Image (tube, rainbow, N blue to C red; front, side, top):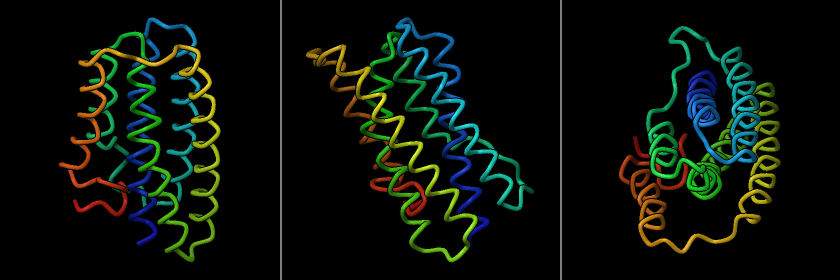
Length: 169
C-alpha cells in the first residue's frame, strides 16, 4: 500500500508541478508568476522523492482533476488570482489531508518523512501565497466567485470531497 500511496501522491504533486509551471509562463501578474514558478519547482522536487519511493513502473503522470482546476483558473483569470484561490482553498487543503492520512496510516519511515516534509513545504508556500493574495484585496466579481465555487463542486463530484488519497474514486 505504501508504494501505491507514494505513486498517487506523486500524481497529485505532478499535477501541481505541471499546471503551475505552465501558468508561470502565461500569468500576467509578476508576483504570481514568481510564486507559480517556485511552487512548481518545489512540487517537482516532491514528485521525484515520491517517485523514487514508489515502484516507478507506471511512471508519474498528473492527476487530471488537479491540472483541470488550475488550467481553468488560469484561462479564466490570466492575472492568476483565481489560481491562487484554487491552490489555497481547494487543492492545498485536500493535499494536506492526504499527506496527513498517509503519515498516520503507514509505518514506512521513508514515506512518512517525505510526506511530513512535503506538508511543511506546502504550508510554507500557502503562507507565501496568502501574502501575495492579501496584497491584491478581495474579488467582488460574482462570475469569478462562481468559478471559484465550481472548483470545489468539481472535486466533490470526482470523489475528492476532503482528500485525494482517501477519495471515493
